[in-house]
Length: 332
Image 1: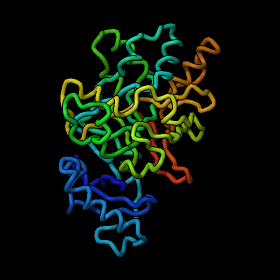
Image 2: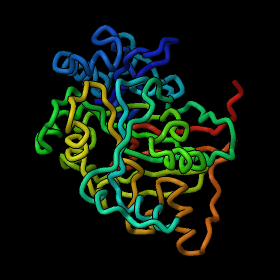
Image 3: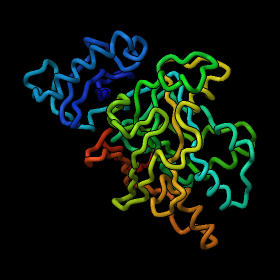
């Protein structure tokens, strides 16, 4: 099933069930007021939400289902508008290698043994059609196309072989980075803050079965397409060259503490060794240009630029809807 959150003026919005073709939605707040509430009581809520999903997908139009309507993605918040925890990894070491090579840095041996992982801002997330607000173009505004999982409760020290059973939903993310602020922050030895603003998510989040045979229980073998101003940046395969699969990432995150329901876990910018698949972020494209030509040619995002991130199934149907955002100057 596919779930979304309707903008209603509150911080957490109203839970929706969305049809598989993304055309219709039905309010589900009589079953669970918010997605977080559904995640907190998943064993109870999920079958009820699934029943409503089946009604939407069985051909009944909005007029036949109470609280149903035609869906406009601009009406939506992020599926989970805020979360108790947002953890992002860098599971595609090819991406790390390229970026480090461009600046003349070696790959630390430990990153091949344990995933790179950090905690990001989760007090609020951005809707798929909301602007990317930034104070200056000089900060190096970049997109990062990711496929993330939303978890149920995960016990501390969970075994990687059992970690997959705690995945409740998948979603797409644009993990926005301000590249020119990050080096100075990392040089302090205490991690990201200003360089990682709020993250944007796809219009809907979906249960693993919506990925069909592409989901093998560890990796999702589907391509993630990113466009900037209508031009294809890349379409890498999420399953290829993923050094740390989702089960391993979950187990690593839960090594010393339990994870609460509603934790969002990203695998990092999708990156393939095959150059023809392109890139999932501008930083990697600039790194390749630097390696090959001695300096980057591609510019970071500027005000007015538009970013689109989307994933399609084997029949060419959009699975999550599109992240479709414009970069805008923050005027606060």
